[in-house]
Each structure stands twice: as structure tokens, then as C-alpha cells.
Amino acid sequence: MKIYFAGPLFTPYTRQFISEHAQILRDNDIEPFVPHENFRPDVSPRMVESLIRKSLLTRESLETKPITELVADLVLKGQIGRAELGLSPVTSEVIFEKDLDGLTQANAVIALLDGTQVDDGTACEIGIFYGLLRKDPSKKGIIGLMTDFRALRRADNGYGINLFVLGIIEECGVILDDFDDVVKQLKVWDAEL
Image 1 (cartoon, rainbow, N blue to C red):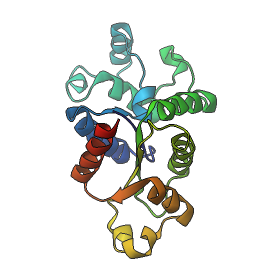
Image 2 (cartoon, rainbow, N blue to C red):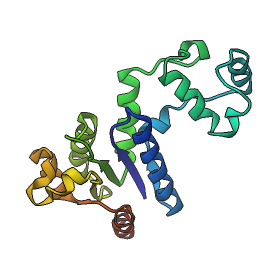
Image 3 (cartoon, rainbow, N blue to C red):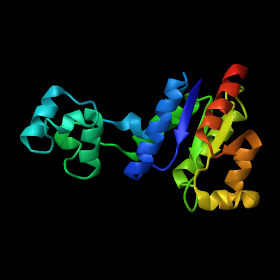
């Protein structure tokens, strides 16, 4: 089963949360498409040596995280540009095409809904997948993952999220607050494929 894991990707802890939970999916034989992981740079040994010479990396830092994450962090923090690394720019067209392909290939979506409102990109991904689901029986549904206790206190009133977005999720899926339940639901849908 292929999953598109949607969520805001603008803070290191949110990216880490999504990546850690994507690994739980992989450990359960579920294949996630994680947007930010698909834009990690290909890192050559020559690039690593260059970054060490420029004092942007140390040999010790190479033992703390995968090299692709270290280099992606340098780019995100503006310490080095993609062009300096010989990498093509990440444009809206590139992001749209890659993420749309991930949605098109997916059988289900997990959408991280935490925050004061649903991230606009996540809402868009929910809508696009819903449109695909209406015409493709291999698309099983959308799971809204809600771990934000502010919203969970308002579960009886739609979690405080946009009612149109909530309506889409409720039409073809469910909102869950425990990742074990997310995995169980995905396994149910996988058995239906």
C-alpha cells in the first residue's frame, strides 16, 4: 500500500515528526511518500569533502545524522545554496509535479492536521486526493492525524478546523489521534486492495 503523508514542512520538529512516523509505516510494510524526503539532495563524496573544507560539516557531524539530512539542513538555513552544490533549484513547478505524482500513486493520505488551522498545502493535497478518489477505486481514503490537544478538546465541534476540509475527510476517511490506530486503519484498507 502506498501512502501520501501530508503536513506542514516548515519546522524541523514537524519534519522530524513526519519522518519518524513514516518510518513506522515502513516498519509495517506500508510505503509512504514523504514530500520533504523527496527533495533531499544527492550527496557525493566530493561534495562532502568540499563542505568539510568550508567548515560547514565536520567528520563528527557525519555520525549524527544521514548526510542528506545534514546537507538539506545547510541549504534550509541558508548556509549554502543549491547552486553552489551543483543542485537544480526547487521551484513551484518542480514541487507541484513531484507531489502530484506522489498523490496520484498513493492509495491513501495521512494528513497531519495539528495547529490553529490546517496548513494550506495540506488542505490542497486533501482536496486533490479526494478528487482522485472519486474516480479511482484503488484510492481508499484520507486519515486526518490530530495530536493537537487544543483541537482534540473541540472534537465534538469539528476540531476547530475548516468544515469543508473536515467534510472531505469524513466523507472518505476518519480523524484519529493515535498513530497505532492510523496503522490499523491503513492495514484494513490494504486488505481491501
